[in-house]
Amino acid sequence: MSFPLVSNISDFFLSLGWLTIAVSGYLLIAVVAVLDKYLLHSRISKPAIYAFYVSIFSLFALAFIPFGFSFPAAKVAVWAIASGFFFIYGLLALYRAVQENEVSRVAPLVGTIIPLVSVVYAFFFLGERLGLLGVAAVLILAAGGFLVSFDLPIKNLKLFKGFKYSVLAGVSQAISLGLLKEVFNNTDFINGFVWNRLGFFLAGLSLLLFPVFRKQIKKSFNQKGTSGSRVASTGALFTLNKVLAGVGSFLIVMAISRGSVSAVNAAGSIQFVFVLIFVSVLSVWHHHIYREKLAFSDWMQKFLAVMFIGVGLWMLSLAGPNVLYLAS
Image (cartoon, rainbow, N blue to C red; front, side, top):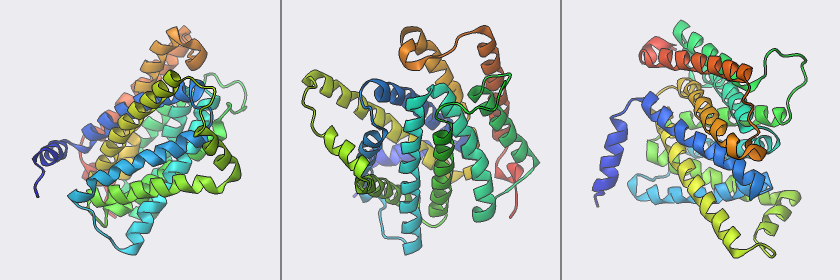
């Protein structure tokens, strides 16, 4: 049986470069991050509940089964499922951090950690060797993420609220994406994507093994005292957000399948620019949720961060992996 529409969409994305695909995905993920902050602040108070429903939504990936699902080698399936576990528990930490602090501070720190950890992971486990241009690009992007995350000058070494959860989220998601690249090195894109999403689902179910999370999740099924319209609007917004997250994740996973995991993760710094733009606008009307600073010095620091990120992305776009990476 042939599926012309799916084939045409697939051909369109395959015709694009990995960087274009990645940036498109990160734009959608930036929208998702901003909506996550709203939902966690006003609608869904427990990060575990949010992560659980995200894992349930991952079952929509089963719709891809007719387009290339098969049973790979056992180790490939284990890598894919383990990647799903690291990702969901990374999301749990990310949601906790976003709930505790500004999304425009948390997201850049997480995104700065991911490429740095990815470079180390890719060096030891994937055989990727950064060339001079690659090292420079990653360091410049990391510097941009640092400038967005921290207020200058740094007057003391006190860490901001949610810092440890941000670090945990970044490390977990970097490992998840590294494992996923290993999966794509051993099976095709659709098959790896489906198995990875099965890992998402199993990770969500594993949250029920923890009494505190199980109690929170079970309580979410009982919406007594909440108006039907509020429940419906929350459900609709959550569904829209997860659809956007699914498409964005799909694009990032596709970029990883086509390029270097270190380079794709480094390109994620562009997400901070999108988040900064969105929350700066929204903070004018929803300051109680986004609490974004709008002082001139803050704008100048963030503008400098955007410049760093722009230069880093430009360097990534100069040439393919043969320039960014040395042969292993």
